[in-house]
Image (cartoon, rainbow, N blue to C red; front, side):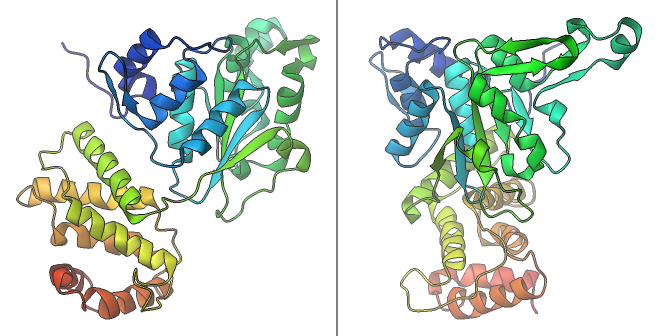
Length: 363
């Protein structure tokens, strides 16, 4: 029997060949426990061609200086906080930085309103605790503690969604590089290479504000949305094609013209005006992020593959656009209808998209 492939391999598995090639040609100094030098980590993230001809695919399309600052922070004793609106590749960048630095991007704490302090510090195997009493063998380490003990990168997703008291359990870890265990009268001390990359969404509702004490332990890097339409088109095209291959969709890669239509719609709606600035638009309640644009294109590819001719077109995009834009049935519907009539209908090359959207939602 053949071993089934996983739906989404971790970055260090998916790009193992690139990481191996980078390590083989990397002659720059490496910080303790790092698999690559800081320069090679940046090259892995941004892409390029190595001296042996190996092509490194870009993982992040954006300002090189932002990536250099992020990597430079991780060389020091400060943790890194990636902040941005939804869909700005915070988690994606965090994963690839951890993969390049530690060779392990899976030491993750997912922040939610229900995340407990145990997820950040440690828990207990209660069967052993009851039968043997408190002991190191009965302790269950968190991903953060495992990173401390192995000199690796720990990732904390959506830090500000965790309760404030859980957030503050990081203060001692980040300042003292140690985790006390009062029950055992000992403390674990981090070995060189340990650091934390956290992400935070600055537009989410119900966010718990970070304390100033915790914020001081982080160097914050703000990831902006793609600066230009061309940059966003490149990101969406690249990721949609990758997802299509991973899902084994028997369809053609998305045509740039169709991707550009989705990206332009999203950029105009979230900006509140058309690209030429002549028409002011109502903004929908959703973020209309790059990640959502990727989802619209990918779902359209699936429709084209299984219910169409394999080529992504207006009919396949319409359903995804409707679902992405309309989150609030009242206000978002009004904004979408205005956009259809004032913008989409008036663009001759978009008449097929106007018809497809009207057929789905004729109101």
